[in-house]
Image (cartoon, rainbow, N blue to C red; front, top):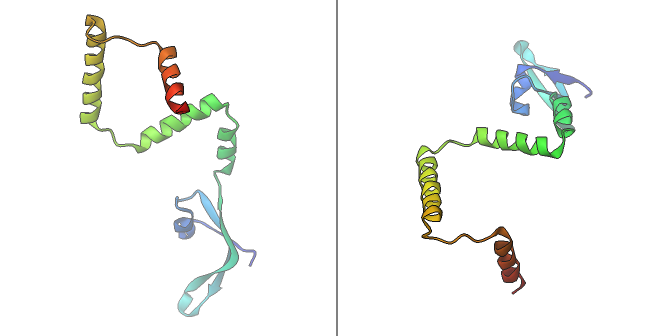
Length: 120
């Protein structure tokens, strides 16, 4: 059972067309020109993009973090209403700071308060 089966017939096992191969599969001929796949207990999928993954993992942590942000953003649906609401909120907060209707608090003061509350 050391056969390696590759190609579109095995894409469903890997999840992506053309990016993987099935290892531990044996093609067993059957009558009528058909065949079945016999999988060994050690069946696994080999990712042919492993070299790319290795290269990406070798990037500095800052670059990997930026790449992760970009990949996650590509999976998220953009919510135009939420984006607009946040834009409005940010503008209102800036106006409140500029006209003095709210007081600003230094970052050091905020962190000190967080630490105080966590110690309770």
